[in-house]
Length: 274
Image 1 (cartoon, rainbow, N blue to C red):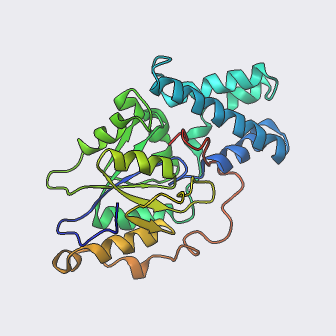
Image 2: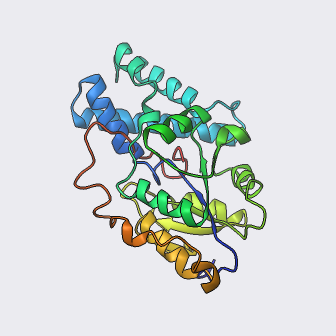
């Protein structure tokens, strides 16, 4: 897809969650360190194997090799496997069962969602289960107008059914929505389903390859909001809330490093938990 053109209706964005709004891998690493009492190197290995196991099970579901199970059940399967492989003790695994509900937002996420939900229609679309999304919404203060789970489609991204679910859930009068993600694999699948695409750079995302052409490239959700308003026709732009000057910059959205007790990042490249 080529560069985005001026909008004649207010844009709609469909946001990936895991890795795009929250720091899945880093959060899990910190959560494992605090819960299991192991050093950061060992915790990073546990998180890598955990997310890799979940990614493989998601792949098996998309390919029809196993029945659908929601992400919180896949997390429990991964933890059981990690105990069996002696990467975790059983009591630590039990305390990590709800870790995915406590993933930490990126520093710009909360402020960015506040701006986006004020001026455009915002949907979340995630491989996370309904239970995990409910926990994340409350614990990470995520704001949207609708959030859709892989559980609603009984499959996982990048299955086309997930993007079709989002397209069928748009408000009336919406134009073609932008799929917003830090993962090029997600955006490729969304583009194939007929969505426009907006890549947001994250340190643990899947960056675009040489052949990828996305409609928008943003450094943060605050930058994405500004770019979307620039595309809106002047008569629509004049009615948009002028909150940008009141919001902190990306660097100032949350001062300093985010706390060590907050979890999250993302897993395998083509089958992140999305």
